Image 1: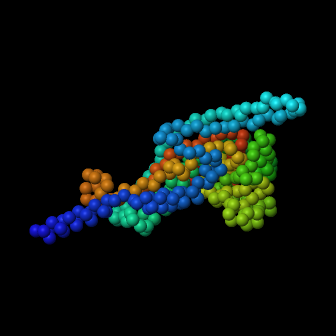
Image 2: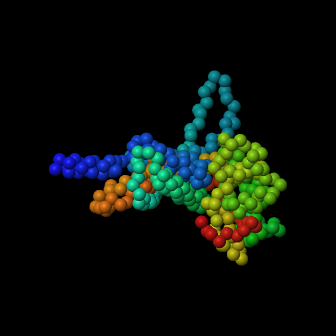
Image 3: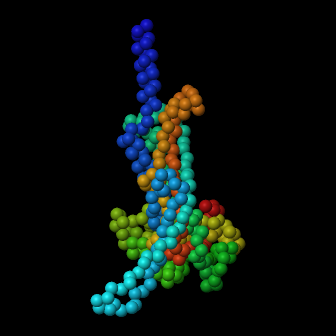
Length: 331
């Protein structure tokens, strides 16, 4: 009888240890891994002004836009303190939303060490989280009002997305015109250069240009952006399959791409660190009556996210086609 009691106690003791939560060390490890896997996909986010998520679970966040100061052309008078100036700050309020997903794991998870199933699931979920959050930012900035259209090969101007033809390619001249428009508005570069986010088909077009500089010719490995591939003039190019493509909506079903050229302080987003992106693990049996036989564990992510354009004039969208290959996929 005593032996049976001992075996029963040992059985339930074993069951109890299987329901333990992640240790603080493992929780920190997996949350860092989730962010590490997500960050390479955050191509559009990396050029935004980052704001921490709202405190105490608030649903609104306040972004701030600072207006340039006027020139100080009045000569100073000796011994007289000038009136000085005031910062003009415009508050832009945005509502944050929650996003997330999870996957079911059929095997018992090892919550005390690096679990291979958890590692693989975290890798896939991190990539999904990065693409999801980056798309939210992309959709905000590609809806901006500062837009130009690549002209046709013979120089004919194009004035709408529907009239972008197959020969309306993104050229060096068009890029320089776009940069000139940004400079007219006193847009500051990002780290001494403007940044363009391009689709791989568009990147292939530009790499054929004599003006193209491969990344190895001007940068060391410690200072490159996620996805950076090269440079033309004072514009550094970042390649992403998530760069906006509208599909075959141009003239004669031409595929229309959007290349964003961005300066500093153009837009803002919530940061993925500091609680903006969370890793959530539920061990087998933690679902109670929803998992009566302790058959399912889950691992997932949840994020708080929003993005806003701060200054329309500090970024410009160029809509154009590509000769490398039409894309049927609108993203």
